[in-house]
Amino acid sequence: MSYLRNTWYVAAWAKELKKGVMLRRRLLDEFYVLFRDNDGQPRALVDRCPHRFAPLSMGKLIGEGAAIQCPYHGLRFDVEGRCIHNPHGKVPPARTPALTVVEKFSAIWIWMGEPTLADATLIPDFSFLSPDAHAVSCEMIIIESHFELESDNILDLSHIEYIHPLFSSEAVSAGEYECTTEGDTVWSKRHIPNDTLPTFLHEAFGLPRGAKADRWLNVRWNAPACMALWAGAVERGKPRENGNESVGAHLFTPETANTTHYFFAASFPRSLGTIAQELADTRSQSPSDPRACSLPKTSPSSKRRRRTCSAGNSGR
Ligand code: FES
Ligand SMILES: [Fe+2]
Picture 1 (cartoon, rainbow, N blue to C red):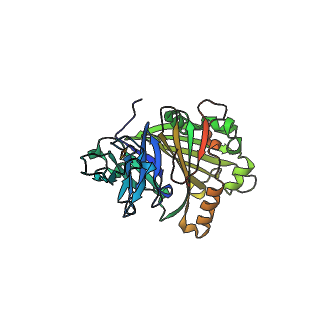
Picture 2: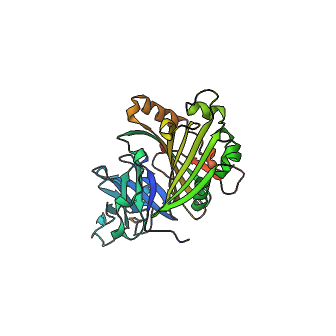
Picture 3: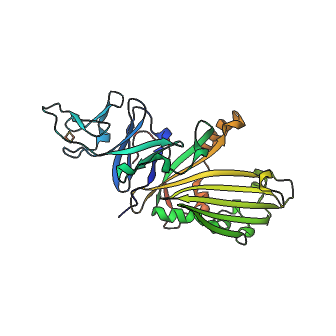
C-alpha cells in the first residue's frame, strides 16, 4: 500500500521510549527500532541488519545508546545507521537507514519521507500536551482497521447519540454543523444549543442543577490523521468563556494497511496544582475506554488490541 510520506507521524509516546530500551514498532508496513542516544535524544533505524537481516532490536545497545550491536554476528551500527564495528575484521561500508525523529508535545514524531523536508515546525500544535505546562495522560492501542476510517470516526461525531449515550442526547443530531478549512487544517464543528445533558455530563461540566446547556464539539484535523477534540458546555445563553471545556488528542499512525496505532491523550494544566498530576495518573491507571469514542466492537472497523504506553521494549 502507498502512504503519505512527507508528513509527521507519531511513532510512540515519549514516555514509552525509556533510556537503555529498544522499542520495536511497525509503522507503514516497515519495522523500526526506536531508542535514545547518549544525550537522551530519540533515534530511529530500520530494524534490519544489512548483513543477514536480523532485527537489530533483538541485539543490544552499546555505550548507553551510542550504537546497536546486531544479535546475529555482532556488527555494530551508530545512531545514523552506519556500521562502525566488525568483530570479524574490516568494517564494511554497510548501513541501515536512519529516520528523522523529534520529541515534541509528549510524543516521538517520525518523518518517513524526503529527509531534507523534515521540518519540526510542521508538526501540528499539540501544546496542550507539553509536559512542562501540563500533566499528561497518554495511551496507545492497536486498532484493526485502516487509519483513515479513524479520521472519519473522530471528525464525524454524529454517531455519539447512538454509540455514546453517556455523552450525548437527541439534541446532538439536531445541532448545527460546520466544516471549514484553514490552509492545511480542517475544522469539524458541532454546536448544540439548548441541550439537556445526561446527568454524568451535566455534573462533569459543573452546570447549575436543572440548567439547560449550550454545547460544542470542535475537532481539528491535520494530515495524516492528527486530531484534537475540544468538548465544552456552558449554561444556556451564557458566553462560552463562562463554560468548561476539555481537550484531548487522537493521533493515528498506520501499522499496516489494515491495522492502526491509536495514540490518545488528555491533559491537565499544571496551574491546577498537584491535583493535575493526580488526575493524569488516575486516568493513566484507569484510562477512559477509547471505545467510548469509537464504533462498537462488532464493527469490522473497530476491533482493538490494547497496547499501553508503559510497555517494555517490544512494540509488537
Ligand atoms: S545479521 Fe547482523 S551482523 Fe550478521
Ligand atoms: Fe465515538
